[in-house]
Image 1 (tube, rainbow, N blue to C red):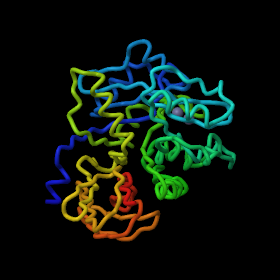
Image 2: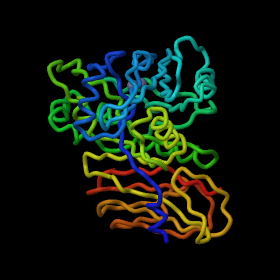
Image 3: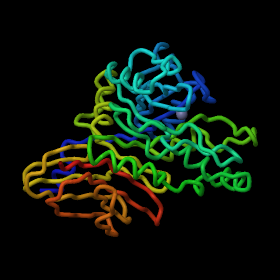
Image 4: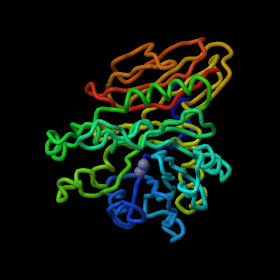
Length: 352
Ligand SMILES: [Zn+2]
Ligand SMILES: [Zn+2]
C-alpha cells in the first residue's frame, strides 16, 4: 500500500535554479545556457538575473525541446539581502525599497514565490568576513530558503592555497549545506510551512584571479545541485502556462527535494507518509496529526538515510529505505548520504 502511494500519480522533473545570464552578470546568453541545460539532461531551468526580467520581456520563457526555461529575478537591494522572486510578471527593483519586508510583500502580492538567497552569504576572498547574508529573520511572508547553493559551498572552501586544487577538482570543494542554514530551516519549520531548495547561483564567468579558468561553468554546474520537483501531471510541452504553473506549484508546496546529482542520480527518491493507514501525505504537506503516521523514505541507490525531526536526527538506516512510525507532531525531513557525502535533502513533512 505504501509503495503504491509513494509512486501514485507523481511525475518527477529535475532542474537548476538560480542562474545568471548576460542580462545581468552571467557570462553567457540565453541560447548558450539552454544548450548546456539540454546537454546536462535537465527538465527545467530558472533564470534569476539581478534586478531584471528582461529575458521574460524579450520572450525567452518557454520550451526548448525538452527543457523548460522559466524567468524569475534575483532582487538585489543595497545591503546584501538577496531574494529570488519566481513567477512574477513585472520587475521588482530592490534598490527602490528601504525595508526588506516591503519587497517581500510585493512579491507575495504579485502572486510570486519568494526565496531567501544564500542566507548565510559568502566568505570574501582572503578575508574572513561574510557578505550578502540575510540579517533580518523577523520578516514574514517568504516562501522558502536556499539551503544548499553550489557557488557558496565552493567559494567557501576555496582559499588562495586551495584554488588550483578546487579548480581542477571542483567536486572536492562541495561538502553540503551550511549547518546554520539547516538549523534555521528546521527552526522555522516547527511553526510554519517553509520550503527548502538547492540552487547553483551560476554565473559562468572566469575567476577574477585566474581569469583564464572557468571552474564554475554552466556545463559543470548543471550536473551538480538540482531541485527535483514532483508534479501531479506531466509538464505539457504544448502549454507554457500550464507547465509553468506545475513547476511553481510544486516548489511553492515543497513537493520537491534537492540533491547533489554529481555523486549519483537522485531521481526516484521519495519521502511520504500514511496516516492511520488511509490518508497519504507527501513532503511539503502540512496536516493535523490525529492518530499514527508511518513515514517512509526511499533512495534510488544504497545510502545512509537519516530521519530528522525538529532538527534532531531520530533514526538512521543504511540501504534504500527508512521507515518510522510516529504519533508525535513535528517537522520531519530526510537527509541521504552517499559514500558518506551529503547527497539528497527532502523537504519537510509537517505533522501539527
Ligand atoms: Zn545573490
Ligand atoms: Zn545570484
